[in-house]
Image 1 (cartoon, protein in one colour):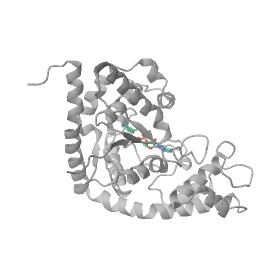
Image 2 (cartoon, rainbow, N blue to C red):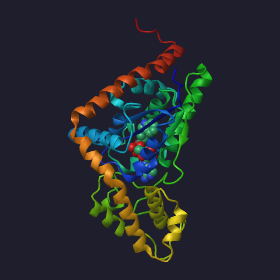
Image 3 (cartoon, rainbow, N blue to C red):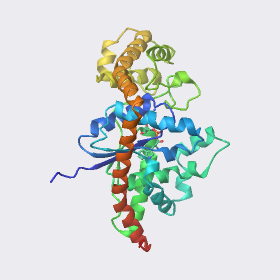
Image 4 (cartoon, helix red, strand yellow):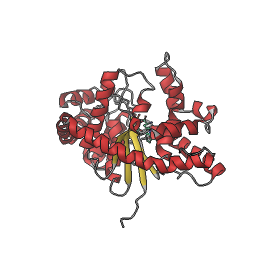
Length: 334
Ligand code: TYM
């Protein structure tokens, strides 16, 4: 009998081109953790509609994101790769968890506050209850570890709080998930405002590196990157956020330490730091981009991955959902 491994759940919103932040904060770690865990990697399309989507591009964005998952090296045979909307248990459990969540705790969420500011004309209830659906995603599968960037820490904490609250009343129903952040790059910063997170939806296109950016665009974005008026290359997030962000990217994509790069680039000036970062990133992305374009053409294969992933996730989602219904006293279906 094969030994049962601990469980990972994580997801990304397929709301457009994925960014280098998504890669460093999430995808890279999914790939490196997938040997030691049984993983569910979801395209969280239900979360995505908290902000208005154009139906046609939304559908194509979902396939784009799926092809990225596969191109970076996620193994869809060993693990579940699926669309959240294909597994009804996520919304079923989310409703129940709604009834155990408090307005106060949800209104404290940083992402809710940020997104409300950005979408003033559409502060919908989904945006507010977003962390509850995320908690359902995680708790539904007995998840032990949730690899995400630093911006999602608060949401994983809510999932933990809800699990503990529910277990306190009804006994041991949910596993208590731990958050996992990468040691370096848990929060990649905007290239234009390095005290702000690098984000998919930044209005300034020079602020964000997309995984499918062309080499010349990457080079230009780094050339324009904001540093500071000093010349010394050193890692100091507080006083040199721009330079520290570039060093982080450089270290992550070359698998070398920040210290090695700081020593190597000593006295070279920011121009050299920027071109070194751009060139190494371009080389790093090249094979991934090539695989992406091959995979993206193969609609039949992509659909087969989604079909298999959904079937397995639907199956896996039943045990805990049934248990939840049972402890709450619902009459089972006949
Ligand atoms: P989303 O789609 O905003 O981001 C996906 C993942 O990318 C990470 N990330 C970053 N990491 C480092 N630096 C950045 N600049 C950066 N930008 C994004 C995010 O932290 C995340 O890990 N709510 C989630 C999706 C979700 C989820 C889940 C995650 C839904 N259900 C269950 C884990 C488990 C979100 O909006 O991620």
